Length: 145
Length: 305
Ligand code: B12
Ligand SMILES: Nc1nc2c(ncn2[C@@H]2O[C@H](COP(=O)(O)OP(=O)(O)OP(=O)(O)O)[C@@H](O)[C@H]2O)c(=O)[nH]1
Ligand SMILES: [Mg+2]
Image (cartoon, rainbow over all chains, first blue to last red; front, side):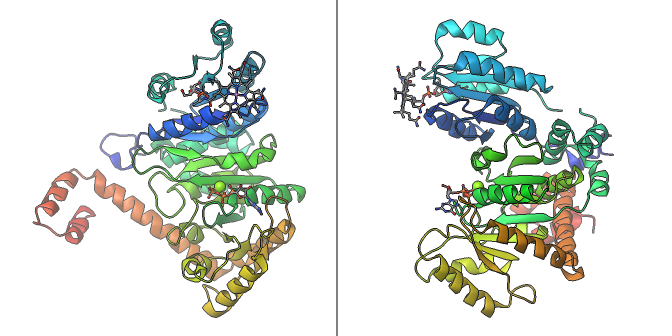
């Protein structure tokens, strides 16, 4: 209907990037996740914050229903090597192939390589500036339309 | 671009990822999905559209969770749309309503979607009702819509929902009246949540007195119920009250009032877009800025009158 040029009355506006910020596992450190959620909002992202103690299945369900462009996992508990790969598997296993999955928190350098191999696109440690995270998401999130 | 008709078919057939992507297309007002609207409406199954509104922090999300639990025990599949405000400065938003809805996170018979208001005043986004219609088409009934924490002005939900639940909390003092009058006027069901706090009975009495005097939109004043959303107290009775309103909501006068509001909204939105898309839009804006043209004449001209 409005595909032909000239009938521009229903042009899509450029929609904000939707990001799910989740805290997997039994990890009460939510300060970083909240700082990140607020910071990304201020950068123009639509951020869905799930709160604490999310299972991999809950995170995959939320990502699916919310149709997010990015899943951001914040983890400071030390359980990242078991939890993060399971979350990636579950998200990909449901056919969400084009969602960018990133992580941050307390993750030792030695674990970064294996996590990337497991499908975590990038990992951001303490002190990362929100602006840098926002730029990374803008550059790497899937393009709609 | 995703194939809209295929997504709709899959969504109606119960594929959640397809439904989620359909909702995104609607929300982004993607032209490919614009064509799909008549089909979505044709596919709706008559779900009960319930709006839940009230001041920030009144317990709307907690209440929606408790309502969902009750509806699930009654064998219903529940759709939820939770709207949060977009920042007017950056267009970004934080949507935290899922935090309270965790217990339904893995329930395949519940579908929850967060929406940012994207510049709309009135407590819901421009496309919220289309998203609700798509959830209806996918077989969710009821569809519960939580608005942005509402003040006086955010009453849009009541114009479009079949049943509007206004959530209040117990308060001391009498100054509540003036603030609440607007919200109460649109209520089909009034809830005094946080009834575990002191003053709940008294607040309910005050509200009852106000409503009895007010007259309201329709004949009978709305029922007032006490709930504790965190424990589930009073939720069974609340669902009964919402269900009882379902038939009333489908009476000719209320159905027409709702349709009229939907049409008014759509006309405003469509004519705005049409006018903005005209080549002479910017020149017209400049003319008004230079006081060479008044805005009303300009609007008539842009809309082809
Ligand atoms: C504050 C703090 C607490 C507070 C938490 C308050 C809260 N609500 O968040 C309290 C006191 C409650 C606490 C408790 C504990 N803590 Co503590 N805590 C810290 C501390 C000092 C700072 C964390 C913080 O808030 N940083 C500020 C935020 C803004 O930074 P951030 O979270 O790192 O986030 C940034 C980046 O990492 C990144 N980021 C984070 N997440 C994400 C996600 C994505 C997607 C992206 C892109 C980026 C990103 O962006 C953010 C901005 O730059 C750290 C030490 C440290 N220096 O990190 C220990 C630390 C995390 N805690 C630790 C421990 C052990 C505990 C306890 C187990 C202690 C105990 N024995 O009781 C408990 C466990 C609590 C629980 N239930 O989980 C250890 C963890 C060790 C490990 N993982 O191997 C640390 C590292 C201290 C240490 N050196 O031993 N803690
Ligand atoms: N004591 C008590 N607390 C409640 C009750 N219902 C909700 N709360 C608490 O009130 C706070 C706000 O609840 P929400 O459900 O997030 O309120 P909301 O109206 O959705 O908030 P916004 O979406 O931010 O406007 C939470 O801490 C809840 O646990 C209740 O019946 N009694
Ligand atoms: Mg809420």
